[in-house]
Amino acid sequence: MSKRNVFLRLWDYLRQYKGALFLAIFLKIFSSVMSVLEPFVLGLAITELTSNLLDMARGVAGAHINVSYIAIILVLYFVRGMGYELSSYGSNFFITKAVQKTIHDLRRDLSEKINKIPVSYFDSQQFGNVLGRFTSDVETVSNALQQSFLRIIEAFTTITLVICMVLYLNWRLALVVIAIIPLTYFSAKFILGKSQPYFKKQADALGDMNGFVQENLTGFNVIKLYGREEISSEE
View 1 (cartoon, helix red, strand yellow):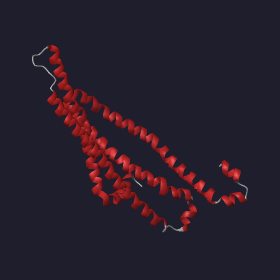
View 2 (cartoon, rainbow, N blue to C red; view 1 turned 90 degrees about the horizontal axis):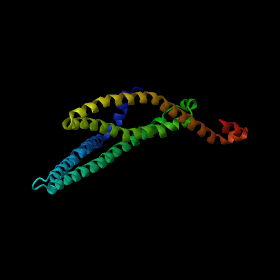
View 3 (tube, rainbow, N blue to C red; view 1 turned 60 degrees about the vertical axis):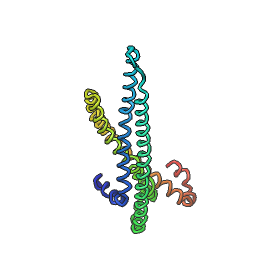
View 4 (spheres, one colour; view 1 turned 180 degrees about the vertical axis):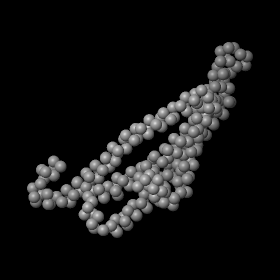
């Protein structure tokens, strides 16, 4: 099955809870905006303090620490921080709500499906491998939706906002950032291409192991009867 078909089939489950899903995405984008604003807001206070201290060092008449301006910046920083924390919590809350309900529906459909599968299928498949579909595979889907999905949204939003912010502050530094992004992307793509087959082998090995363990546990009396304990232990 292609990646596109996988996403479309997952969307059939997710769209029932698209309200919570879209709210989680919106809150994650908002938290990314608040995160990118942090150095900018702090920079205002640092710039003002530096300017005040330099004026005082030069002996400029009436030079002093602009306490009122610094206080306003600190209030803005506090509001920004509260916005970031609340939106981060909200995005995690709503994505968890949507994903857990989606996984519940997926497990329900799996349960209904397995009761319709002919017995011949189970004769040709290890029970542990089938069990792995219900446990580790579904858990992998759950983790991908709950963790990776929002991280992709956050990464894309953050990169876009950081480029805009750096262009505003220092265009030369922005060029360096823009040059690094494709290098990072192709490096990650290369590593992913090399590592993905190993993850597939790991999943296959886990299925074989679960099948072996399950069959040996349920068939322990047969193993004992024919004196195959040592052979089973070696395997």
